[in-house]
Amino acid sequence: MKQRLLKPSYGIAAGLIVIFALLPLGLEGQPYWLHVAIYTMWWMYMSQCWAISAQTRMYSFVHTAFLGAGAYTSTILFLNFGITPWLGMFGGVLVAMILAGILGWSGARFRMSPLSFVVLCLAMSFVFVVFAESMTITGHEEGLRIVFFKTDAANWHFLSKETHYYIMLIMLIGLMIVSQFILRSKMGLYFKAIFENERAAAAAGVNVVRYKVMALVISAALIAPAGTFWAQYAKFINPEGLLSVNMNILMVLYSTLGGLHTLWGPPLMALLFTPLGEVVRAYLPSRLYGLEMIIVGVVALFCILYMRWGVANWFNDWKRERHEAKMIADSSGPET
Amino acid sequence: MEISGISQAIIQGLAFGGVFALISGGMTLFHNVTNHVNVAVGSLMILDMYIMLILQQALGLDAYIVALIALPILVLFALFMWYVTLKRCLHYDHLMLFQLFVAWILVIEFFCVIIWGSDFRVMKSFIALSKVPVGPLVMRTTQLIAFLVSLGVIGALYWMIMKTEFGCTIRATAYLPDIARLMGINVDRLQLIIFVLSIVMVGVAAGVLAPYFTFSPYSGLTLALFSLIILVMGGFGSWEGTLVASLVIGLVYGISSFYIPNAMAILVPYFLFYLVLVFRPQGLFGVR
Image 1 (tube, each protein chain N blue to C red):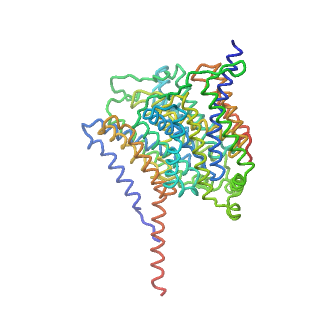
Image 2: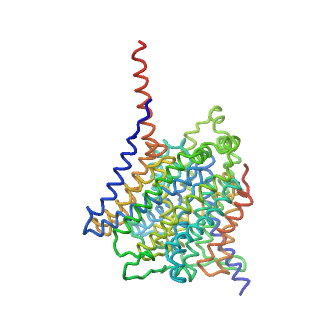
Image 3: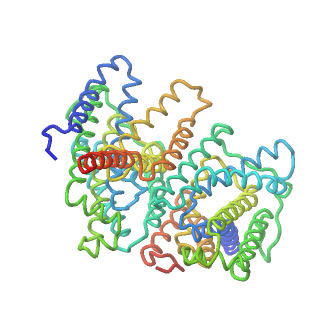
């Protein structure tokens, strides 16, 4: 088949970037909806990060710990030592990578089954909440506050929401490029081999432990800046908002429903589900708070019933089947 | 006083572990015949407790009597779960079925939040405040009942699995499902029966736990996590493992909450769990 110079997927990606880049102009004077847009993109970012580690069946339910490592490290460094969050972010990345390395190594080296690892991660995410709530340096349950009154780009202090929007957009685009790179690279192939059959992959010469740990560490390193971003954007971090176990569960739900080993599945589900909660909160009485989660649950049930491997994989299969059917129809024509 | 304090803590921990043996026992059964883990048990327990609460408010009966009425309602809900979703998804990948249960958790949990609010609730029972002497120690009657009922149900179940023909089919299915099917065992029906049985165990656990447990819709996750830890720590599908792990976790939690201030006490069982997983990734009694 002739290779087209401009694939349609590039066009779609470019169109999406333009739409996202122009969105703040459309939301001029509506700070709430701009906030919703930032929040949604934040969730898209996190779901995509989670999907990277899940490519090797490292189903980590502890990603909020890495998120919190990014947020708390940069904030503590800024509040106590005056180090700018632009640098503190890398400190957060380092802490998250160390945590992920320890956890991932214990999971992969001792060959825990995926489910044991899930339960271990759930337990650890509770542990991190307790730690953050009981240490003075993390500000107990009240959390930490960053106070500033004027824009100071050197310290990541921006009063306008638009600036934060574009920072998040750039982060998201960067993450999508990195994910695409991982999916297309040899490493991505190893990840997929480990996902399909760990023993066969090991027999074929893939260093299973190394790649499993690597997947988790990469994913943790990518999610930590999202924590730093949130600390600077919300100017306030607390264990309930950043470390809660429910956030882990939602992240996992979005990613798996979107479809693992795909580029656009996980962020798509976050894009669909996150604004839902804000709409419910904005337009319905406070008595009905939580309705969005019921809707998410019911939609998730239907998705799982009809799309075994997530929306994106279902779509890809459908496309391939259609293509094959067309090929068969084309080829059978002249022969008869 | 010190000695009696610590033994009091031990006894409370054992009573706590006994109830979890019941929940994890149900999960073990379900895991044995379907190879999946029902993580929605915590939320189902909370749902059962709320059903008990409205029944109590409507009828004014004691918590233990209400528990018996709530049990069939919970089983009906579980059957609904089974026929609508679970039945068609049992051949799925582990992660997807996990997500299926997570979706159910979201639905149940936030349904409870909307209907009953997120405040902590307690059930009323005529023996809620009474205490009984156990040897040299004093125990709350509700806790003693919970412990004895749990051990009784676990014992009956163990007998059923090891001694009856039905138990033999369960063990056969757990061991080699395909061969069991060839030998004429109706595996699909067995899976349904086991699912209902595990839900009944969850209902019994909720019934005996409710009179001394303050619960909110969000407690479901903690309950589920504890039973998952016990399940993994004992080794998937091992009966002895589940029982031992639940008692060990309960004991360790009881002792640590006696010596360590409240919030940090929960960490000790978690670290114990981590150590067990590192040294025996297959669990205490598991085989790999």
